[in-house]
Image (cartoon, rainbow over all chains, first blue to last red; front, side, top):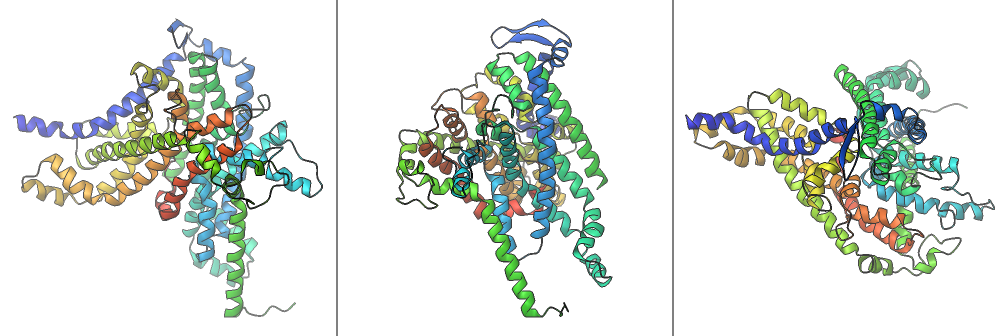
Length: 288
Length: 281
């Protein structure tokens, strides 16, 4: 009898440690966050007053939140477009296997393994207005230096470029995998029929690569919505709030503004966006 | 112009040209990293010379010495190593145990547990960073290295990867071990784990790099200076008014060096298609 019970319990004992960590540090906080978003309160006194959808109504008129949200959307669109185009271009350029392409793949992938903080520091060092190598090159060419990180538009451009730089290698590898699934005979046949490389790209590569392209687009979109660290280090959201995105706004609302309940409502909005995107992703990968 | 059919020689030349071109492009792409590394060996005064020289004129390790002594980067390096290593060991153990049960046992709630694991992928840290701070505070884990070691150890990616792998281990092996009187734990420890070494190695590499590069966890959890990880210390250095670039650049190289070594030694793990599609984190 005891033996049988033990046998019944075995799988549960095996999953217990992992499930416990999941439960305490992912599921519980998620539930907490949802409950918090319907309350008013702070870190010291805890939950103080149930406000229903009050926090969410406040969000609709909150200039700081709406600005960070619209900045995030613009950032995501630009980053994703650049990432998709550039990683596909790299994948096509490096799809052949040779020593040169192998080394180049390592080079283009390298930023992916760097931490976002390191990426931020490296770009800040390069684009520093007084000490940066970019401005030094500009002035040696007789151009006047550019205030990269203190001008609104330049700061946005640098933030986007740094993000793209840190991501393209990852998606390049996915695209190379997609390219390898296209049968080589198709290209041979097209060549026999006299199709030039450009026609081959539009008629063969791009259509057959559609599932991969969709997957890359959605993954890059999800990752871009979560952007925070690179920007924190590069511009700290500035100048003003020009590069402050959603996650930074959540962080500042919670920990600098000491308003965890209101920040929780913002987190729920972010979660909604990410869940929608993930559902689309699951849909696509099932159709594969 | 009349085009001649490409001879072997011309094809070879074209390949060589293409290889040289793509390597050149990759080097250009890496200028931000290369420039940090080169600058980190320049003496303080040389960092402020305009225009800067490409190579340090008087290369020095002084910045590194300063970072390790005055900047306390020896402590931060140890903290990062400790966190990444212990968290990875916990992940290997708990993920493989869960993966074994999900792959090889039939039990009530298995499907639900599997879906829960799947669902947690949708919940990134960015979404729960506020409530997780409250949970950790209630458990007395704020400003403790354990607060950044334990929570991320239950990686859903790890459970998936290992489950897929363990599914491919034939049931007959487990059955014959049971016939010979092996306990369930013995089966996991002496059969499943040794047979899963390739998958465990993959998870170990990824888990170590994730934990080494983690920033939001320590940013939210750690407040005191001695408990900072490299990433946190680096971000704090940048945040200071009037950045001390000489220390910061050396500290950046210290932070990126282990990842660079791991990547260059094990690049096929990162560049293979097997794991490329897996979710980061």
